[in-house]
Image (cartoon, rainbow, N blue to C red):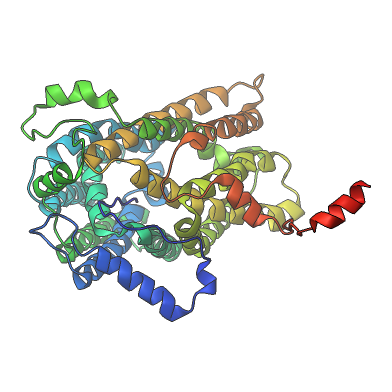
Length: 508
């Protein structure tokens, strides 16, 4: 995910981390954590040990949460619904629901900002949403004992997916704002790089093991998924319990601190008055920071351009190229492995040069990736070499996109009313992604348009166009693109001083 900081810390010089001795890096991090001692207001202090404890707890929270998510979503849930006889439209709802419910995030942000504890708000949101999956566990048990119509479980599953995603949408902005106050701004890249690497490693190891457990269950795959789902709910509750070890933040005190520090405290979606009504707040939803509006345009356009073809990559392999599903599973594992390796690398680089330069340069690679699919076929060389290499490239580049997009969002959102900014960004990305998936599925049906190959080519054009608004987004700690390009050149031009007398002789 992402994190935001309300800290005011000086910017590090552009010095490669590899050139610093380990002790120097440790001293830098010690100084950063020292500067982060006061994060809420003058009365509420969070010291270094508490920050470290909170970040470690957040990492464990993410590890358990991703196991829960892999059980209640992704390939395991899709396979469960297919075993029950779900049709393609019902399967497609699994992808569209999580994106569409992001429209509720602004309302969740409004509610969270009027509470007095980010921790307890999070608990009351994610605790019940994860316990709701016990209803499906009971439904699977009832079906196993009484042999009722299994398709009835499809409707039950989709209803639970809808309700849990709706509830979860109310907590996303609150979680981002909470992490914003806990993660020092100059450690974001490194911390979230390590955190996301832990998530990728957990996914890489857990998904195959969970799949084997379901398929090998003596009572059948449906009973196996029911037992696994019960275990998933327990793991999800363990994830929520990890948040008890994180330092709590009072949104009211946090808002007062911003009011006391800002020359113009009414810079976001509202004014100082915390008692303003929702009806008075909504008309100001478009009175956003201009720099954030530029980011918002990039974020929504990019989500549309990506989702117009990304959901159909696996379909292209299985349907168009007739590649065996075992190979598709291996390719997916290679993507996760590349993400795991590159996440920390991109995090360190983003801390040094900024998130925007990384997004621009890596974004070009991501934009042309769909074209690479078109030059590959079902021949042995492509199956054994080029497709694995392509998925490694996708995993490595997407690690940068995910990490730096979230961190850039943190950097450009004004401190006051951060939750509202995060919620609006999520809503825009959700609508853009849902529209992209819908348009892509519609265009892929027309052979005159070119089918999936034509869709891939269109996505490349749209991805390149989506990068243009990013050129106008300002990030305080970001180095100019021209400077970054010069630093990447293998041969750098050198200016040699020439005496004036020598120049005079040459002129003669």
